[in-house]
Length: 222
Image (cartoon, rainbow, N blue to C red; front, side, top):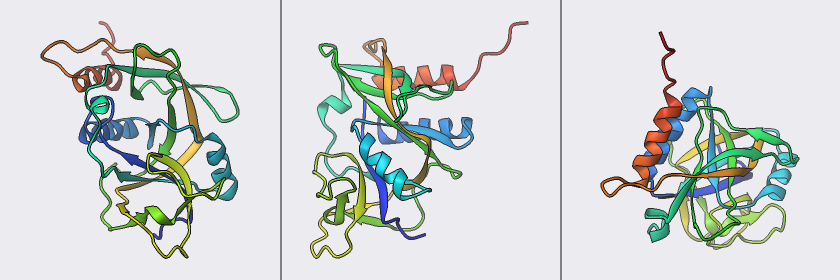
């Protein structure tokens, strides 16, 4: 299936002390538990661009590509990690996350204004690397609202492709494609700071334990 002319593009890597494999493994379990729906946390406020994407297409897609640069120290070993409890939709309505969903992000304990967002995604297939080799070229991408080229540090953006671009720049593999489904995009609310790992544990261990508690319901008492 050819790449869409207009789509949400997000680049992924190590985040909140969790490796790519750990994140995708948990998201696949989340997708299976929620009839194909999974939530992908992002750091960019793309609300206006998302609204434009929804205006242009009735079947919006998100394309996932691996980050090429080395993971930053704050992503590998963050000061703190939070789990988000609720969301707010594009039209300002409160949204309660499904019980078998978990969105985490790194945070600073000295900051009182942490913000994070999430894409609401759907895939009928397991979250694994695509069989076909597809790619997007950084230089051909334009922001759907402003028409400007996206910045190198803009990890997530809603873009359109400019096929007439002569110099298309760096090529990024399309690792995975998914659809965006209602409510499409969330501003996350009510972060819960997770307990700091003990000396022999990592943030990935803490998140994994929290996910197991959500993913495997407790048996009813006799």
